[in-house]
Length: 146
Image 1 (tube, rainbow, N blue to C red):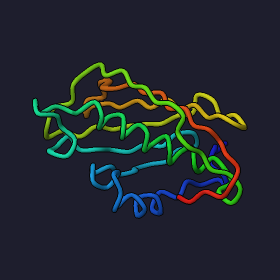
Image 2: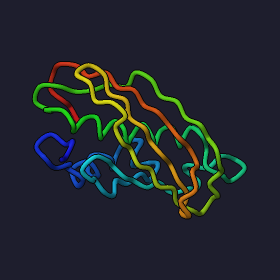
Image 3: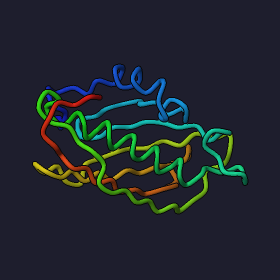
């Protein structure tokens, strides 16, 4: 059973909306929405690397928040509710080397009426864990402006 309100995640719409935002500037692209997850990718390049040439921890966190925010927005009825970030953390466990790509997958840990918690795994091209993030979202009344 799908977690997405209305049964389907609007992947193309979200990628168009990303284009002129931080998400687009970082090269983040949403790739796939399964029944209970959202997957995307981000390049490790001059936009996202630190001076040592590896993925900047802040870029990992921005990527995690992007995936969780889009996912959180579309498990709700966007005509009546929206969500905003409450908390985010990330454990950076392995570097991602410049010139590579990282993949992130957001899955819900809890989808409550007032709070959502998302786990985001960011992995390298070989499937090795780069960052494990938890994003907590508050669910608020009012239409979604995404």
